[in-house]
Image 1 (tube, rainbow, N blue to C red):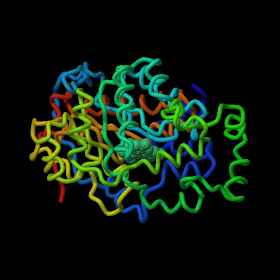
Image 2: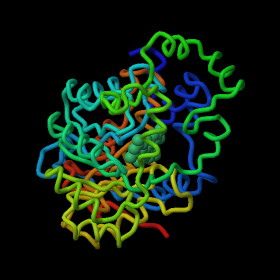
Image 3: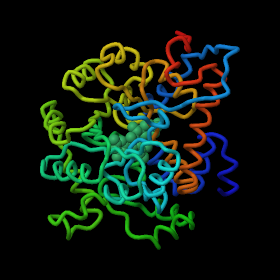
Image 4: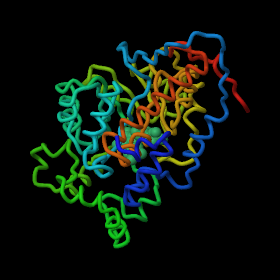
Length: 384
Ligand SMILES: Cc1cc2nc3c(=O)[nH]c(=O)nc-3n(C[C@H](O)[C@H](O)[C@H](O)COP(=O)(O)O)c2cc1C
C-alpha cells in the first residue's frame, strides 16, 4: 500500500485523496447530492442524536463481528452497495472492488449499470448480490435473473427509488447527464489529472458490460447502450412486478430504497426476504428523512418478518454500531469504498474496508460488547 493511502486514517482522509486524484466532474458525481443536500446532511446529523453507553469490566479480548444474513453466516455486517460506472473512477473499476471485498470477506452488490459483467465478477469469487431495476423489456429482466442464477449470485436486490435520476445540479453543470455532454472546461480539468487520463486512454472503453453481449444491441456504442438502459427504466412498476420477479428468482430477494413503514410492511406481506432502508445517499429525492430516523419505526412494523439493511451516510464504525443497536441486520456503504477506489484502486478499497471494519471492532471493544448479538437499545441514549 502506498504512503498516501497509509496516511489515510479515516474515510474523510480517503475522500480528500480521491478529490485530488479525480477530475472534478467525476469527484462531484460520487460526492454529489440532490438539490440542496438536505437529506445528505440529515443522514449524517442523525447519528449525532444517539449516544453510546458503554458497559465496563467486560472481557473484550475477543470481538466477533460475524452475523447471519438470510440464514448464511457472514464475516461482517458491512455490505458494499451497488454503484454504477465505477471504471470511470479507476480503470480497474468493479474488478478492484470485488477483489477487495473478497479479501475482506464482505458481500459486494454489483450494480446493473456496471462496467464489468455479471459473469466476470462471479469469476473473481467471494459473495455477490446483484442489483436490478424493473425494465420495460421483461425479456431483459428474465435474462439478468437467469444469468445471476447461473453465476451463483446469492441475492437479488431491486432498487425502487431511482425511476428517474435525482436532480443533481453539479452533474448537469458538468455535463454528466445521459448521454454525457462534456464541456471544454471539463475536458481541460480532466487533462490536469494526467494519471487518470493516461489510464483512461490506455484501458478498454468503458461500457455497460451487462448488456453488450445482447445480440439485439451488438451494433450499439457505449453512449447508445447507456441511453438504451436509461430508456428501459419502467415508471409503471407495481407490487405485482415484485411478485413476478420473486417468482422468477426463487432466492433471497431485497427491495432497496424503502423509507416508509407502509412500504416496508407491504414488502414483508409479499414475502420479500430483506429491505434496504435507503435514500440513495441523499442523491434522489431531497428532503426525505435520514435513514437512521425511520429505522426504529420500520423495525417495529416488520419485526422478524424480513431482514432490515440500511444505508446512506455511514462513514464511521460507530454509525454501524448505532444502526445495529436500533435493529438493522447490516449496513451498506457506497461512497466510502468509491473514495477508496478513486484514491488508490484495489488498495484504496481495501483501505476503506479496513478502516470501517477496524473502527467497528475497536468501538465494540470500548463499548464493552463482544458480539453483534449484544448490540441493542441498551447501548444507546437517544437525545432529542
Ligand atoms: C456514484 C454512485 C453511484 C451509485 N449507483 C447506484 C446504482 O447503480 N444502483 C443503486 O441501486 N444504487 C446506486 N447508488 C446508491 C448506493 O447504492 C447507496 O444507496 C448509497 O451510495 C449509500 O449512501 P453512501 O454513499 O452515503 O454510503 C450509487 C451511489 C453513488 C455514490
